[in-house]
Image 1 (spheres, helix red, strand yellow):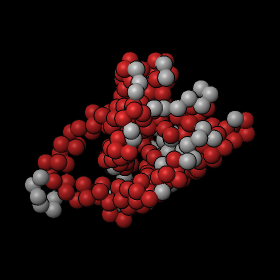
Image 2 (spheres, one colour; image 1 turned 30 degrees about the vertical axis):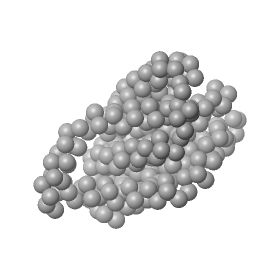
Image 3 (cartoon, helix red, strand yellow; image 1 turned 135 degrees about the vertical axis):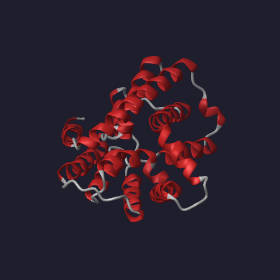
Image 4 (cartoon, one colour; image 1 turned 90 degrees about the vertical axis):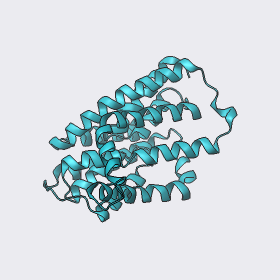
Length: 258
């Protein structure tokens, strides 16, 4: 992978990781457009690390506040919130340890598969856009259901942020709280997935020129930071409809013409 391909992959990863349009789906599209080019193991780890760091850069105050509450070792508001985050991670952990090999077999730059799941994302976003605004707090049950939506989003074309936020909106949760909860609940799964990848990949598979890695890391971090902040504003304003239309048009185009 040369530097401009790394730049494009990094930008796409960072922007689409947080916008409700599916990062995996768009990376599959980029691979298709570039003639089937594949990400290396090290490249994948680097760009995902960049997106995690971009979340930490946006939410570092919230994370420190939550950790301070947890280390008081009492069942306070912060501890309850963290427990809900843990509950939300259970479904994706189950998927990761049981059927991830079968899921990864779908990542073959097949535009019919990607397009079909983008249409599903459009349905999720449409439901979230038109649901009546309510201000219910996130419950343990709601966190688990959002976790199921996140687990389903391991499929190429099914947006993680779109699925979890739309699910939360259908459950009646506060838009302000959903924007934060949806992003915080993905930090540990991304780190865990990359840790498992490190454990299961041979050292010989990580060779890659340093410069493209740096380009990809910076592109993913900067675009991820911008996209994360933009998405928080979008959720609070309830403007998911345009993304639903975008996913519908791209998904339909892929199925019909790609």
